[in-house]
Length: 146
Image (cartoon, rainbow, N blue to C red; front, side, top):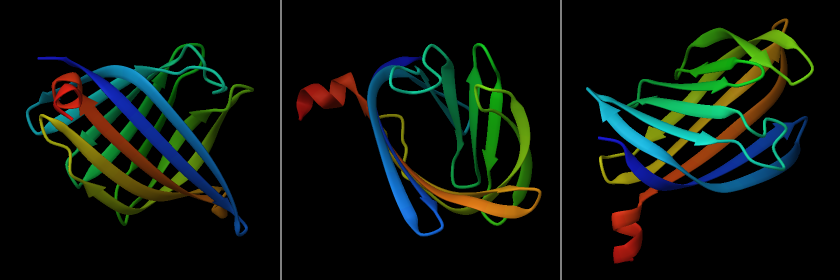
């Protein structure tokens, strides 16, 4: 059963030692199918992907997939210790990038929770950036109890 949730996402991007942080709080939907959790929301301003639907597919501690649809489709697969080649739409065109999963910590349950994952991006095998993503999911039932 899908639940309406409050989602907080904090992304920290590191490029050559310089860090940039972006935070987003939005509403979305959350459900579990078998052992996989799905978290979906619409991108809003100031994101360059405003109006796109983003879905995080959380396969416990094994793998996280970020799927973005609407105007230009993108997918990133983060799997600890594995490098995946993924198609990423920048808004100006698509490119093939390498995504190397560094770590995944997933405490998501049917009642929400937190997930933190880190990955690096490369283009033509040259490291371009390192990303730390922190996602908190709160169901409205749990939010009302707090």
